[in-house]
Image 1 (spheres, rainbow, N blue to C red):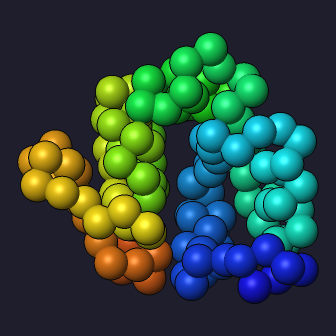
Image 2 (image 1 turned 90 degrees about the vertical axis):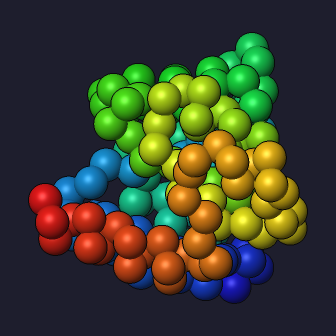
Amino acid sequence: MQAGVPLRPGIGELLQLLQAHGVPCGVATSTHRPLAPRKLEMAGLLGYFKAITTGNDVAHPKPAPDIYLLAAQRMGVPAARCLALEDSPAGVSAALAAGMTVIQVPDLVVPDEGLRARGHRIVASLHHARELLQARLRAG
């Protein structure tokens, strides 16, 4: 927890890895503006992100792909070249519908068989996600 904002274990190390490799990062959150940037700033994470896209920025919320498509556009990266780290089923559906690769790090909702069948990667923690990404970055 940083400044009263709960952080998922491993988030700092994951963002540091991506920053060290020059990977642009963005946020696509259903949390409304201005709360989302304020929470990121309080947690000391705001500087890692090139773009922040919130539920206020799109007409259709997750599971529609709108928020992810706009986030990719704001970062200047084609959606098909983006990787989304998601915790919710609606977020996984949104990112997949946007054409992104998805790694799910479940939080409160355990993925059911229908969600598992969607073909994305599911890991137990952000530490595991970091290991996957580190191997991928090494491979080029």
